[in-house]
Length: 140
Image 1 (cartoon, rainbow, N blue to C red):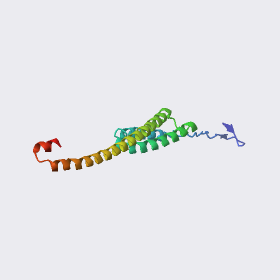
Image 2: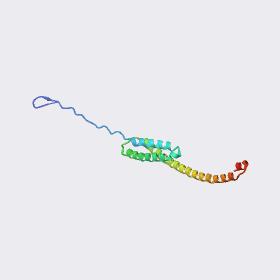
Image 3: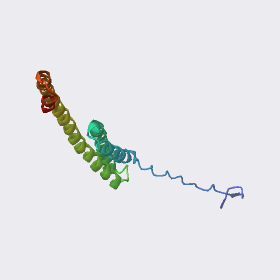
Image 4: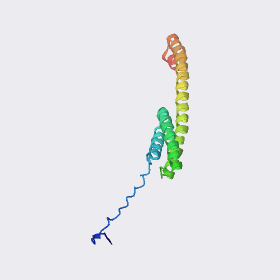
């Protein structure tokens, strides 16, 4: 408190200090990465859905690497989640490729088997057509 030239006391205004709160960490990419990695691994359990597992793993690994960049810049705080997301997404990619290879191998084998059945069918129907007794038909 001080006095003015007129003998009146002057009161000073209190000084308020406004501080800005630190920004919230942006952990969404790491969480999305681990979620897509886990779902991708679930799709890789069936070889026919290996395509979906591969796609989800690819997207998850891209998001995980983006989250790793956020970690290095200090904008995110979920280091373990991000690394787990990258690892599960890469595993989904690997198992997705294995599932795709298994699927196409099975399709190729099915085609070969159907060709063999078709060739054997002609021999079988010729044998049955030329058989005159039930014993000869059973032998075919």
